Image 1: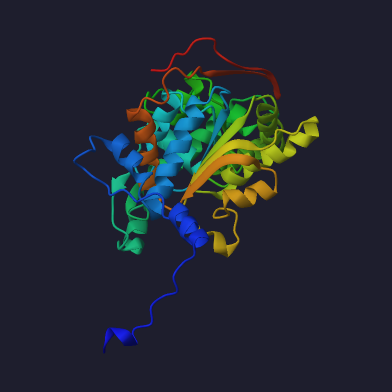
Image 2 (image 1 turned 180 degrees about the horizontal axis):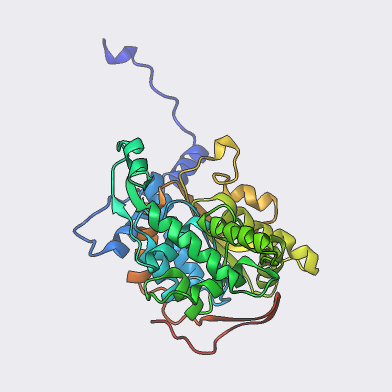
Length: 370
């Protein structure tokens, strides 16, 4: 074939050449370990990479901006998935300890497994290919490739029920109940203990869907059997309490780990602001790490841009999603903020409750960041 037979592409006019140059403006930068000293540097380099590395880098950058924003938005952390089984207990605990989060909304399983660890329980190296019928005979529960002791789970379920027996009958929000329960354990590595000591409210809107709920059901059964009035976890009081935090914050920011009930609950607290006669404008920042996909239409994978259509995320919000499983993505984002020292100098948020009423929410005048 001679060159005269090759059909050359149409040459671009000056306008198209200019547009092309504008688009082909920024090169992808290779991840260069000759310039990387730690996790913080690695994640920062992701910001100039591509695909999920770029998304993860953008999430980390947004988290850092949240922490350093002069408006001091209230950062609400949503937790779902097998995070403690994955080895992330200390990461979450340290996010509280180093003042990277102001409010937690979690599934019951995560909080129960923190409680289980605080009482001496452990998560053990297992296999996803285990003989589950044999594990059942040994009272071993499997969470993918992690094992837990079912006998201790049952013991700790019972302890939750017995603790509930000691409370005055009445309605309790999950925040109130969890705070009280945390006083029965003393473990410096505990998420619950660290949150209580640093006045970080912990909500569990689906508390009955967990071992905490099993223990509370045991309490309910025993109380009814004995003719006593049981305590009740009031999920609508949860709505009322969290929404008070949202409407009384200067701004809010959301960090969703996985999705599930915590993600929607955090978002609905913004929607419910109208009940208090206020339009917060939606979260100023939002980021999510998840493996759920948007195209199935479910909440857990729904994009943060979609949330803007509901007013849950501000129309001008800085937001990003990384479709990276949280056992990998959360430590990287935390490591970036920690090693870059982005949390330092951020005043802690003080909240005071009188029953179900938020009496005070204010930043301390000085920082106690570790």
